[in-house]
Length: 495
Ligand code: SAH
Ligand code: ZN
Ligand code: ZN
Ligand code: ZN
Ligand code: ZN
Image 1 (cartoon, rainbow, N blue to C red):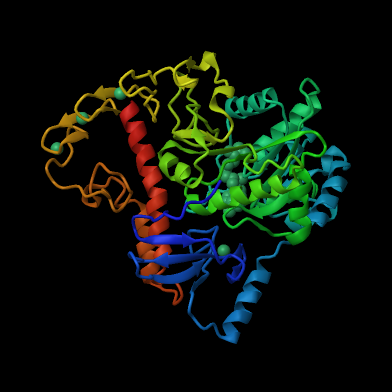
Image 2: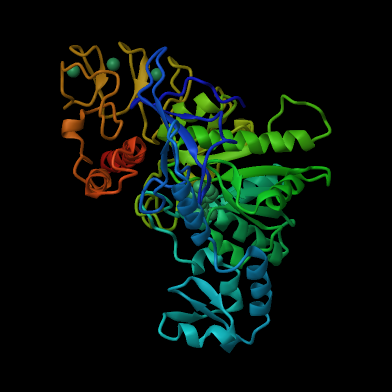
């Protein structure tokens, strides 16, 4: 799984992954090095910025690569990093958990405002807060108990529906995986533990890697590592990465698989790099010595990132399965006929082995040798099942490929497009500067005036010496809203 070099973003900002070791740190671990405005043979200006946060409210780190940082600023930065440290260490949290579990029912309380389990001695200090009683069952479902982080720009937590989570676990168990490395999939980890309690299922093991430290309250150090998937950083340092190594080692005879569900606004290249590093850790521990085999992985992401993901991880394939979520208005499984979700599985597991449920409308395509969504009909001319978005696509004999059902061939433009496309205007290769769509220019972008994009501008103007010209804000705004824009459109079109 080599990360290919040609990974330029259309805004001319590129993530450079070579200097991770020397990068300065923000509270989220080593920052990433970006290059702005590089043209062929010409070096652009480079800067470091936070790997995990797109909003300077969450992390204001910014530094030009060639910038001399004063002693005072270094100290201030260190103090800032320290101030972000948590109330308790993971070890302390888990000790508290064990004590909490043995409390009588009427003493078990959770503070919703502080998002922590309270020990009896702490009740009075939280008396003015919203607190709730906690049952044993609730204690086993932290993903329900904890308020989903809903920071639109950074860390929105979208939790799997039972349908999708159970499909994933049944599929993986069916393929013989007994250990699941849950990267940003807390609900999956939780379901594995619940299934183990039911005893009906074979005992699976899991390890959760997530940046949300609230989960340290519920899991031991062998079950949870505080981890940043954009820079493969373990906050607990060595002890923590040793937990990963121990888990992915298959010397115990149990096969391991990774399931990652990163925030959709995340940059693909650093994510792919982290997953490759996890695979390398796995490879080093296998005694088979077959270095061509990669660790089995599933990366959950919207379908429109397919080209980008395959560019970074060429051994991956996108499957037709539509993942849906409990708390996402767009990706939710409706009561009456479900709304199509744009979220898919990208995997290096052989697609023919991943059986998609017939009862939910999937079928096997014997030519493509894999399961497809029923509406994704095989095209004999293209020799594939062409649909990406779940709708039935149609073949255009002039373009010699299948296109979206809403498109018509335009003889002026020489290719298929939406009937009301700005005809004859040379669209340029990049389409909309605002959201990345190829179907309109930024002038007519439906997302142009939404808060997401304008807020970057506003914030940039309103102050902050360090970040007033933070080029990354634009890039991230673009990638994120590009996804949002396409989701919006998809939904609009599918009704
Ligand atoms: N569908 C999943 C949740 C996905 S939401 C489930 O039901 O289990 C994205 C998850 O990634 C969240 O748990 C969030 O805390 C985590 N996350 C966000 N940014 C991260 C980062 N930089 N590193 C590691 N985990 C991150
Ligand atoms: Zn940061
Ligand atoms: Zn076709
Ligand atoms: Zn056409
Ligand atoms: Zn046209």
